Amino acid sequence: MAMWIQILPGSDKPIYQQVVEQISKAIARGDLVNGDKLPPVRKLASELVINPNTVARAYGLLEQGGLVVTKTGSGTFVSDPKLRSSDAGDINALAERMDTLITRGLNLGIEAQELTELFNNRLAKFNRTSNERMEKK
Image 1 (tube, rainbow, N blue to C red):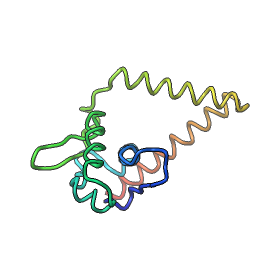
Image 2 (spheres, rainbow, N blue to C red):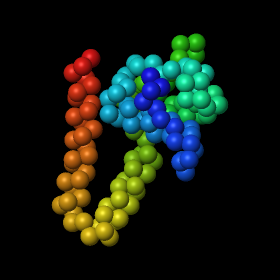
Image 3 (cartoon, helix red, strand yellow):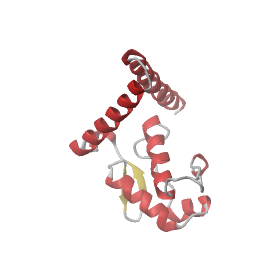
């Protein structure tokens, strides 16, 4: 499972954040679905050649975000999207990020229609990947 997680040592992003982002994207794409078990902290740390505390921190952040749930003695699992709480604070943060991207696009001279197409194309890519994964299972 660790094969799809790639750590970029020279990145500006801390290693734990790289792990969080890659697991979050895998869940969003459907590569990881409800009930999938994540590798144990020590095993993933060993495979990525990083400190186990770094993986534990990443898993903790994923759990705080409601993407995974840890069951003592059993491991860490992708949580059911229906049971994830949609926190108003998270939605507001997402809206602010979108505002920033829209502003940047408009400042680059990209028309509103082009921005919409770009967003829809990116969303379609995620949906295609997710649907392809579901068909394989």
